[in-house]
Length: 168
Ligand SMILES: [Zn+2]
Figure 1 (cartoon, helix red, strand yellow):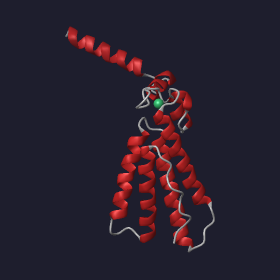
Figure 2: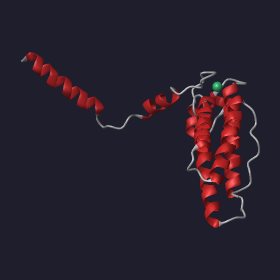
Figure 3: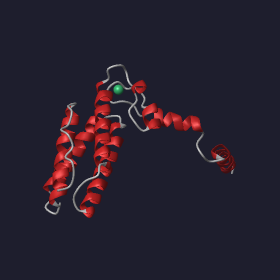
Figure 4: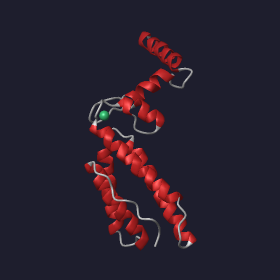
């Protein structure tokens, strides 16, 4: 009987504590701070806030930050290539642009991860699978091959080859 009462009282306490519901901002900030750079262990707070790698989250000369910046630069190049006017049929043009933008987004997200190099390496494996899939159209295969090579180089910390200019 007594135990039952205590339980009821505790349940009330829990209800009281969890009300009004949404997590206080301090707690949410804490959750973001827990995401740390795989190399220098700096909390990626500004990185997550701004949606791009930030020097202030890393130690000076952190190799992961340098590679993350290269990944962002390549994502920007993809976006620029997508905005350039191209010759060719409208449909393939539109598809090509969407493909570029979608993958630019993937790379931008990868650059903000604790270990961008590992993510980019995974992406290169995905692009390789896309290249090898039999049902992939020829122009998409060409793009996937370009991105696969670019991701491999980015994972090694090298600059990728320039982006091919448009759909064939
Ligand atoms: Zn770092």
